[in-house]
Image (cartoon, rainbow, N blue to C red; front, side, top):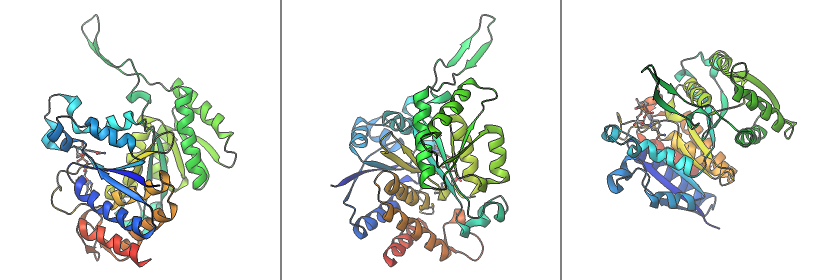
Length: 361
Ligand code: NAD
């Protein structure tokens, strides 16, 4: 049966990097007989320009019908001045995440040994780093109600948000994390602030309950402040980390920067059936858009994650990851990961090098 992939290039460097990921997908489609059908849609500023909204119903329908979605990036200065916040490009992304109930955000932080020099930490601390951060994406303080800014009786303004998680929300993200740990080194660290916040006291209790279903996984708990410290002190102690929306937002960016190169990091956002949206961790990079110099590898690696997590095509996913590693071995680098002695290439050269490496296998 054909598998239907929705391609959403988005804005800025989005179309440039997605073009290369599509070349790679078409190549594995042919080499591994995957029966993929790719369709395109508009999201973000490019959708606003055509339809007056960052998430047209037509795109949402295609997204619901797809088996998986590959997205470039959205946003840019052209749309920053839009007075109605609901029409900003980023709302297209949030609408897709909440509309499709993509609650499980998987953000690997992998440091290819070839790029160890790119990290701001010492090579021996980070070389070979391979962490997976599982972040809850549709709940917690970012969505909790009541929220707002109100004026008190004394005339002073007060801002307030609500940090809330119910048992089933914690259970479903914990299961994603345990399942991921089972596919890796079977170590899971749950991050909370159970010494201060009741919501995370419950978080810890529920994670421990779910742990009983996964006796092979070694579980630990860590307060978020300590986790932030440990991530920069000795990051290789972690295998899988699971946490709520806000802590995950912050920790996953810190973990990403351990690798020194945002242009290398893929991500996945999954629903309860492992249908997902896959995208690079970086944004639309308006400062380099249109120049053909962006690094397409995060998007190409996102396509590999899509094959692994939503389509169950492990062999094709492995082949893409190995092809990326080979290209790095050959010394090919886009500007963001370039260092002395390496060969600087543009976006299309990098995409084509990955395709060539795939065909060499
Ligand atoms: P950014 O990630 O777009 O760029 C940060 C820096 O990293 C820039 O110097 C950029 O040139 C560089 N960079 C990013 N990706 C690169 C790549 N693939 N190759 C080489 N260099 C790369 O973050 P920003 O500048 O804060 O945001 C720019 C726009 O992107 C904003 O409109 C923001 O809202 C949007 N954004 C979108 C997403 C998304 O679509 N998921 C995520 C973050 C930011």
